[in-house]
Figure 1 (spheres, rainbow, N blue to C red):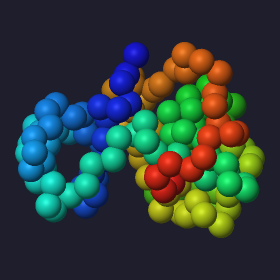
Figure 2: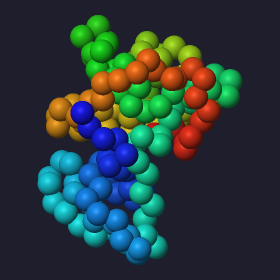
Figure 3: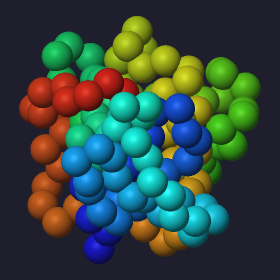
Length: 147
């Protein structure tokens, strides 16, 4: 099982990274797509663990990103995950199918594109989460912003 506290998104850089080591002035990460390691200085970039990201639902609720990714994987045969560059209407329709109560005001098109991109990266690396407990989605307070 993948430890999503060690999989990070980095501001200003595309893709996902595995956190290898933390230092007081930054972190050493490995790009999940090309496997290259690099040092990321803290003063230039922020690292955000996927386990700390949530997608906004209607009201003041949110659903953790790993739960969203799991839903996408479970329903992939019925609802194929679109390409991140698909038309906005297609992305919105897809998200409404797998997560009918997502907040249409706070989840932006860029968030949807990022979600689809991350899903494709994680699926390619066989790192899609499987919940070990019932989803805590509907009562979870919002963590960070949507993906």
